[in-house]
Length: 396
Image (cartoon, rainbow, N blue to C red):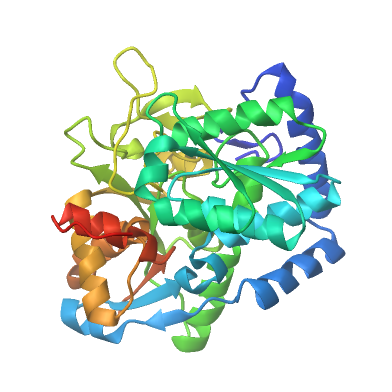
């Protein structure tokens, strides 16, 4: 794997128009400089500890474990971070980097709204202008997060092109970046896009697996047998996996959004149904139609509703180091309800995809084995949508 050129096997790269090349090269140079800079890392750790409320807790879900039987289940509580998800880890890193680069304006794409909220939060903290692009469909599904972003001082731009979801928001943000390179940093929310984004976002999110390792050693004196996380673009999963990649005995399991099933067109399970392609500045796997065009995808989860997967995940799949499993809407909703009733923790519907697979896996494992599930976000934002899915119409 050659990270130097932003390649993970055949995946990754910089497939972008010439108009964007200068911005990407500038970002690459700045990141190479600051990633090993002691002062930058000290400031970032201070933001993590004092502002984002890290380290997040590794919680032994005793009742969940007892109810399911089998492996002990620990929950990595990223939902307890400031703004309610793992997104703040990457955003604080990128916002601090943008500030050091002399940028005064942050732009971002968002699906479920959590990355948009985190970006708006960091912009408010660091006194920067903020514009968030969000598919019009997602602005309806996640009205509460739209209000939160505006409350934090961000401008929210509904994107009406294509399927009016996450992929279209990414396309619009890339277009905007091209037009305003001099004062703007594009704060991309996942381990995707052109190099250096997949590597940089992973590095900022790797705090998750670093903490899991330390916390597991304190609590159990050993590493877990499996680490499970949901995957859209894949930033919380990459963060959860990274420091375990060399630990061959730890299973790494990414849970994709199967929507209404991988045998239907209404799915977003890229590894299960996708093919190699180039989109949004990277080579990776993408859901495509028979003509090789990016297919419209579907998931109950706005955050996993993306037709591709980050290039490092594609590489981990190719090498067999990580497993990727599809989880349907129905399974995710059942897990959303089950964790809420069992542990008093309402997970984001994205995270519920990982809980759903843990519910299947735990009973097949021994009581002396350990699973860690990353709860990537909290579920307040999803309650109205899940109620509607269950036939109950409630006001946001």
